Image 1 (tube, one colour):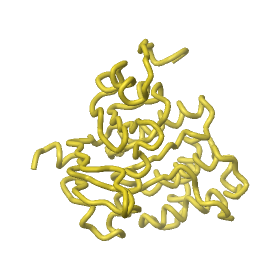
Image 2 (cartoon, one colour):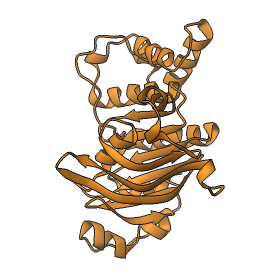
Image 3 (cartoon, rainbow, N blue to C red):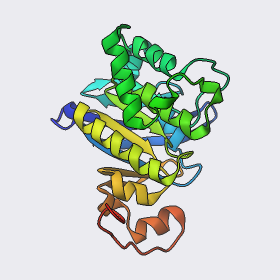
Image 4 (cartoon, rainbow, N blue to C red):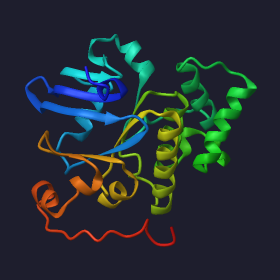
Length: 254
């Protein structure tokens, strides 16, 4: 087993989908590094959400999913849940909890104890996300974008080794998209974890990702740095569009 396999995430002959239809078939990704953000790109129906759910243990799959050299697929779900946190596109509706309370519940689920210190950790995270003013608001009264930010706080407070974010920016304004991705990148590096993020905006991947996976029809068509994967040729092959890439220095005013 290589040193790379022991210091990040790898998938080998990984298949996932439904009982009568495979969406992901025999997928192999040699190495997703710790401390880096990997963006998962691909058109609708390419298998991005199916892959994320299967990695989190929420859908049928087979093959190998190695995190730090340990096959997560052979572990009990409870053990995998201690290491892997999955944030879906939408949070469950009808949950009548305060924002602060919901994040403390997530913190306890990860083994944390309720104390003034732990509550301050929660509040510090809410301040980082710019939603401290929502601490005593109820979840079922929040907008879609606010719920996404709370879901991200719930995910980060659990201290995962593998963080799976399925379109965490879809309901956010552009300025918040940049802010959230900057925060996720900073926390990924600080905690030295593996982070996989589904995004639709190629500009976000170019700006914020360290690594890119490109899917089409369940097949891996690109695996590498953003500059190596996001090219006019791959955009044509995956999305059926002709494009010209014009790099800019971190965008306007950055």
